Length: 461
Image (tube, rainbow, N blue to C red; front, side, top):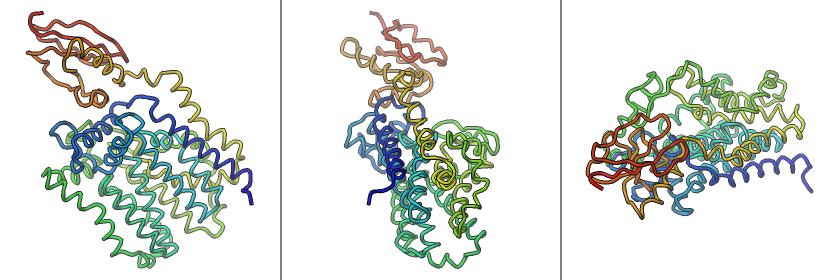
């Protein structure tokens, strides 16, 4: 029997959004700073064939994140080439897999329309749409925690041993993506659910010994190898990245960037922004109790899942909006429940296509390519000059990760310009002027993305 027209339409919307995002992955440059930084780390991993220690720079280990997302990006580059599409493909693949998990979970616990609508909301809210095609580590964490939450629910509510073990496997992936934070973000909603329902004895239903063994087998070998290869990693990663980063405003210990000082509870504002345009429907959740229909335990679980991540970061001032990504599947499930009851499918269609259509229009306009942070065109100008006048590509201001990515690692930043060889110097919008050596004669050879490219000859012509 053919599915109802509304089901076919929801499938069509979801597949359209996913395919549009897939088709646009390679249509705009890698963005500085975070996306380009992670893409360059993955590129270095591939070309160096070092799959243990991600490298921030030549000979400088990157201790800020475990390697799972870099492994996936580097493998994608090995298969598809070193380019924008390959760099972002693993994020899209993880997002598509997450959508299938959401549909399967909600179809079993609620209904197929709720599952499809939740997957659509997750794919077309601002952060979900952005992260599904961005070179970030948050997408891998969101997938790992989605797997962990679904396994936890099936284990606690249905004593499903297989799904519970899959949840422990997800925690192992989380440890390989962001570290112990994954354990905190699953323990908090689990504790809240158990406290609110009083089902503490259900913890005995979970396969603790084989589950912990599986989680450890997935994650711990890399941690041991990483510490052996670069001693000091565990102290920086466990103490610095998992304590100092979140409790110390403007933390000065970050080796790879700068701390982000935000007001307390700003994470909730980020959550609202992440849910745009679906945040408009949040008032419908005020009457969410009317949808319980004997599913009180399920709704409490999804609600505690939804609030746990922003609750954990409420007192943190060093945050980014991407931190709320692991909570978005739960918010999508809550919103889908009320939207399916109160909103017409035609309205769902219009809201769902708003961001994909706007993004395509932005790409067509060329405004994304014109961003000053993009250095793809500048690097292309430098490459075009090499045959006639070879020279290094120098960034005297802050580091440009996109320039490193597009130049295959040849671009470098320095506080002191070369004194004995010709070079190319890039001056970007906002850079502090840096005088060339007195013996250098510099001439402008190209301009792009609010950046000037100079060729500097050292010594007599």
